[in-house]
Amino acid sequence: MTESGLDSKLADLARQYDDVTAQLGTSEVLTDPNKLRTLGRELARLEPVVEAYRELKEVREQLAGARGMREHEADDEMKAMVAEEISTLEARETDLIENLKVSLIPRDPNDDRNVIVEIRAGAGGEEAALFANELLRMYMRYAQEHRFGVDVMTVNETGIGGIKEAILEIAGDGAYSRFKFEGGVHRVQRVPSTESSGRIHTSTATVIVLPEADELEVSIDEERDLRIEVKRASGPGGQSVNTTDSAVRITHLPSGLVVEIQDEKSQHKNKAKAMAVLRSRLWDLEVAKQRERDSAARKTMVQAGDRSEKIRTYNFPDNRVTDHRIGTTIHNVPGVLEGQLDPLIDALVMADQADRLRHLTETDDGPAPGAPVKP
Image 1 (cartoon, rainbow, N blue to C red):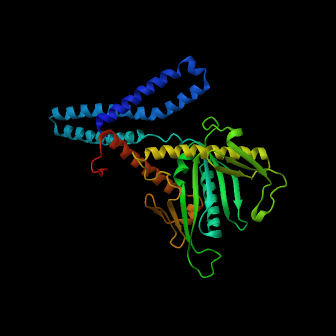
Image 2 (image 1 turned 30 degrees about the vertical axis):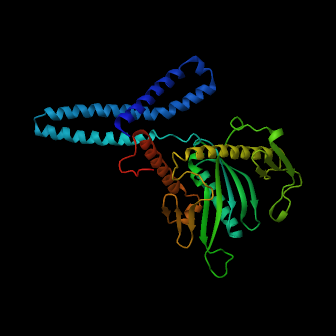
Image 3 (image 1 turned 135 degrees about the vertical axis):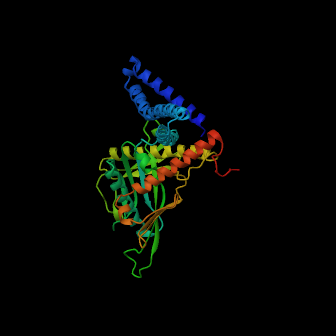
């Protein structure tokens, strides 16, 4: 991004900031809680960028003055002091520019949403079900460590410590931003406890991450679009969980999506949870269609994308966790499965930011210096 292009974008944001500040002082906004909340969030988003931009302008003014002084200063000692000041100001200018470029990366509008995480055992039989349960525990621990609310919406257990499927709701500011890169196939390599010969087995589990959608965003005609069935909930091996018809199975006829929730004893609560999952799945379908339309222009290296893609391997013999999208390896399988995911998630966020910044640069100014030319 050229200096003029950066300045132009930052000047636009400064004008937006002034406009939002002015609107917040009007009686129309002060008497409308929704408008007040919306503009307050926009102001919070713009404020750090505008403050950094204003500091950049001040640093550049100081630089111009210092460079002018250097040109006309005859005293060698004073020249050395001015040169040192120029070096400090130039370093600060560079830092501000790099930080401002990152701040201009288009933000994922879903980042602040609550998130629904679905975990399903894949290939590997009971070992895959045991691994799926470990992933469930890993995400619950991670969410709790970051003070997110966790609601286990449904769990389909196998009876010996594994799960066939589990659905979690994780609530809190920024929940989706921390979980969105977890979607895909997770692979475990280890000797199963049931393996007498000591051979290493490979098993998988699939994780699906959905931003939670509300009723206003996804319109569902319950009478025309849904088939709702109720039945008695069951546990491992068909054992009855309770004696009432509380389990709810909802089929969305236009899309064929099916959601079944049975954890609550209340049929009403199970239906509400099933509808929340269904809305999020339908929302995700729309996001996927948009992503497909945009893919010709850009494909983020760590974007959720294809759920059949192997994204991470947990290798127990080597005590190694490798994220295949960015080539990051951590030698701490027990810690990661205890919820110590920040090193991986932070690396994914940084890789995504770098990719978005590169795309922003190519879009605004042509390919970045040294960037490969795309056909």
